[in-house]
Length: 429
Image 1: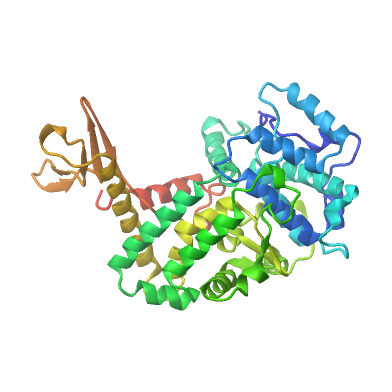
Image 2: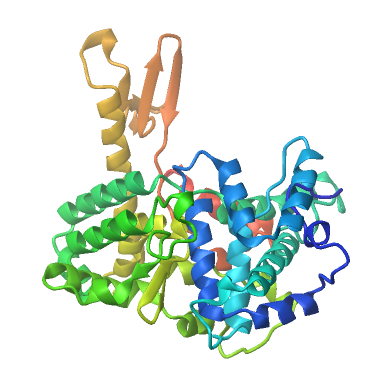
């Protein structure tokens, strides 16, 4: 069984040119590292922005920016030949390219202007299409084969589908996620008087300042127009030096925030590859997204860009929490449990607003619905029960974190599924 081909391949767009891994490395080494990384971030701002509903226009704009007319013509023929169209550039592919660029490329003397050269754009587009194939081999190493039977194939597919979704989804609504994260963190603060002091010691900012910085970068780094894709001043590039040196609270807050959540190309390379200066494709399986999740902003001199908008938006929920977990003050598991409690309270509050309490048979939603078991003991039936005439829906709100390195889907699907059940099962059941 083979993966359904929905992405354009290098050989279809550049027929007759080599596309093996050795050629990929040679092309990436010709790229100017910082320029290529900044462009990857600018591209991802469109691919990973959930409020965009013009996917075809995004593909058209990106293709026309990086491909020459004859290559565009091949892509149009290819798209017409497939009922569902064809996707040329996607988020997982760009993430794959980022980590090879940071390892293999170096800054050219003309860095900052290299993409004005058609040859550089051609190298970038070829590298991107080859990165697509590398991504597919990493995410679908078994090609969804039925070897070992259907049950084993399903277990293998669990990891591939999970990884593909994680690296290709457009993520949560950034502003709703920011609001949700701030509300959940506020609930944690109300329940933990020591939280603001611990957070300030870890980050150098108060919780409100941290969320203000997130909102600031959401405002200026997201939602860019496709018409401004080639305009450095309006395409998502950030003048970080100007922001960090601004007078008043803005300069202090942005400077403190960037100190914690931005990284240079050299820092990104060390975080991804350690001291390696080269690697074979076999290393491609060791892609830890936490490297970008922890510091999603690239800082290169005075320039900067959000490398991945999905991972950046996730910071509004997970970022503050893991500063507390790593603080060493209190057990990390306790902070995770407090987060779970706060999330549950937030979700119940949202449900109660959607279905406000009333008296008698008009009440539809019952938070923490009480009941009695066979031993006549009082129990909680569920976190919430929603009634709809003859039907009832039982809700369980959970926020649990799993260390995937402790239970790999690939090495042991059974252990991974057991960990999911252990983390999400109700206490005492």
